[in-house]
Length: 403
Image 1 (cartoon, rainbow, N blue to C red):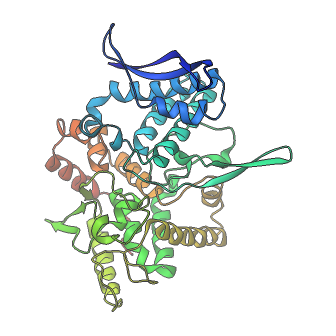
Image 2 (spheres, rainbow, N blue to C red):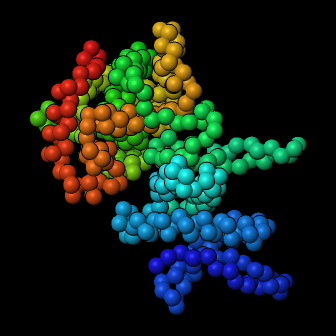
Image 3 (tube, one colour):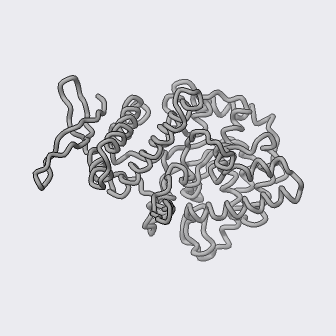
């Protein structure tokens, strides 16, 4: 089976014969079925007066995306079971990462990949507006000028969403680069960042530690309950679950509180995280009006901390952290961290690079990160092997002892 582009004649209300573009599903050499994806081409291109070439180019971009998903269908069982409604931004991000890596090896041109991203961005905005997919996300707009005229267009959702694991094509300007690690001075900078958080946003310290040492995404941190952290034989297991129905039941927009893949995740450096957790629980007792089971609470309304609020606090810590680097004359670190973009998701990148330095294999790293390829990794490495490898490596990994 594969997705194909088909051209056909359509009669307008006035009786005029118009050439149109549609998307079909080709089962074999003889059977091709129309796909509802054609509605995207019709509503976003044909009905808006776009040329037949514009319709055709968009249709081919969407069929390339879906053919890639189908080719790798074993990695996406949810699409087989639940269909289009289970499509998420991460599916698009995975495809973009695939194209970006090919562009970095010279197999594809950067301009081609950027054009594909534009089509996917428009496609996902359409899916969201039509309530076709379950994953909702907020839509931001930017103003585009053409001479004296201006218009509002949707921002690129794949660049503005923090929680996506994505590789973008390399750009010419370093100002647009997104970094995923603190660089060669990582260990010292982790200490500095946590100490900065302790000073201005103590409620955030545990969350930051779980991102650095557990590889959690922002949405996974704020979905934790007080009972989500378990210590077993000095190993810390984080029970990552989609708790949005209980923690965020009043939320009208859940785009910043969704957990992608519920799982149990291993946290390294549990001896560092445990005292932070105990201090955090003590701090929670001060919220006498607290009614939520959430591990992270907003000081403003005593409810579970939302993703956007978490990012705002992180940005506050980041700015103070950068100011401190400048005061301490850590110029090299300051240049690295101000000439590049980074946000809460850098914690997951830091965690990954720690694992690489610890000597874990790619399959072990995939398992430790809770990647979508977890099932294939399990066929090579079981959790006990992973725990033993981590424990042996951590014996030689002595950082943050003074925290």
